[in-house]
Image 1 (cartoon, rainbow, N blue to C red):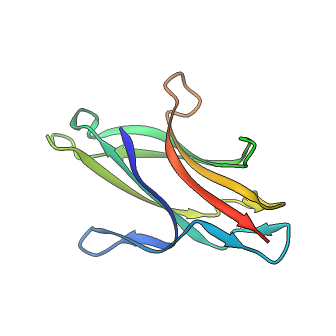
Image 2 (cartoon, rainbow, N blue to C red):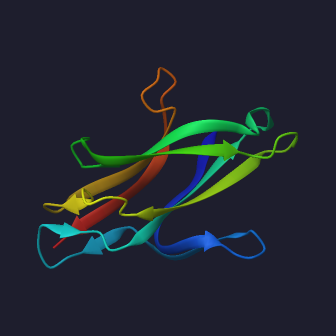
Length: 137
C-alpha cells in the first residue's frame, strides 16, 4: 500500500464518470495575523493497493501536525480498498473536507503537515505520507 497522491486543494470530488477531479492546488497560506483558521478546502488523497488487499476495510487517520511533530488534531476513517477479485493494482481516491473540527487553527507561522496513517494506534501503524502547508504572515 502506498500514498500515490496527497494535495491540498480548493475542491476535490469525482466526476459523473467516476474520475477524480482536483481544483486549485496550494501549499502556502498567507494570512494577515494570528491566530487564524484554514478556510474550507480539501485534502485530495489516493491510496494505491495490491490486489490481495482488495475489498478489505482498513482503518486510517489523517493527522494535522505542527512543525515540532505534535499532533494538533486528527480524524479517523475506515476505507474499503479496491474491488474484491480484481487482479490489478487498485487506486482509492479520498476527497477529505478540511477543516474537520475547530482545532485546525494556526497560532503562529510555520510549516504544518497533514499525514495519512494506516492502522493508527496499532503495532501495524504506518505513515503512508502527507502534504505540507507553509503558513506565513
